[in-house]
Length: 391
Length: 244
Picture (cartoon, rainbow over the protein chains, first blue to last red):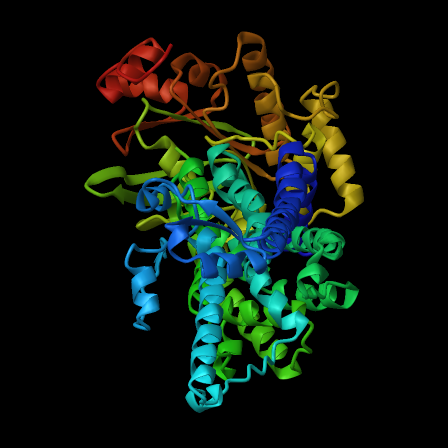
């Protein structure tokens, strides 16, 4: 058996005996993603449904100034309420999403046929209020349009005269692509799993061995340090890939339970998608294992390695966050970059789009190539003289 | 047989080892005596190829360690200063791990492991995970692990450190047994009595240099002291860092 395999099996066996590693790697690490995902998506769906179906509650100040408008709103199912004494304060305190104020001069302006002012008191920075505000705006715009048409008809003019252009909204999104927006965080959860899955073992196998004073005797064996590092790296990679597999399995169970159809969306997460996602994401495990091992070999102590590695796990979130804030149009070159290509390929897979073979191949090849380079860096760090010196 | 010639190693401005030369013969126990910080551990670390010397050469049974470090390592059994075990593996698994890394086949591995477990009298703990072992049990397991490939040359860095009387006595007996088997045994210590009682040849190191070497009588004759311990103190120039 080649030396790296001996090291590999020893690391696997030793870590299988550690209940804490097993729990954090294969239970906590793998299931947190799917559970978090199901919980958040479930919450988003129920909030969306609730807001869309609930009648709009609209506090109105000075309702007596515009009985027609109020009657019309009520006819459209709006629950008109008495406005609070200080509408601005109520909005700032988030007691209400939106308040309509009808100023005292409204009635007179209306009678004289001049533009009558309505005040919609809102806080645009409140995302939660967005839906109520836009519903109120749409209702008022509708009322204005209707009144304008009536006034034109009274004067014998066709309302079409003032409507030279009609915009028809031709939506190209499919139920699958709409759920892509909801799924924006899935890539990060999967990438996180593959990094976090190897974290514990990588830190323990290098920094932990040194701390426990067993690295020096190990390195005295007539085996090259590259082989010893290789065994540890492959064990890290194996744990990372195993937690990815478990996590994907858990996703495939939780995803179909989400009531996404209720908001007209579809998430594809069957066996075929699981297999594709595994193929796409697993190579990242090599980069993760190489980085975690390098950091563990570089750090002065176990605690230091633990701190750096915990920060390292957050690193792959950066492309995901940038993509969520500023979605880009996929370009060919993006498929040759790790993380970015994973972001795109994962989203495409769960949206139910078919993947292009060369894109997958480019991502896998580039990721493995960079993974090998990082593994070589880890091997170089293993050759440093003071790596083994524990005291 | 270990031959060390003009070894030097500096850490920053500190000359940790400054021109050390000596040899250790087969069938003898050679003691490396010196106060803490004299350069014993650094000398041994260069000998077992963990550190690269700046100048000088080391031969193990004729093999130059800078030319063929793996070949030299095969001829050495080392109990280093760091002797951590894998606490989630049993004592036997700890020993077998190193045996496999030495490339032993399964039959030889089993025979060697059983023999060492018998010789070191650790049969009762061999199947237990090493977590919670006493110091003596740990050192014995670490020695078995170091000797699993049946090396001709045995290096022990302060082997009796932290051991109780019983474990110390057992370990000394074991070292004598290694000598009887014709092996070259080299061990470091800062305990004068231990060196005086065990060694055929003694190399006294202070401040990175060899200040005296030879058999016990030779050292007594060189210094004109009748008592070996007085002779040690005289060549080192101080009692600091030594133990009785």
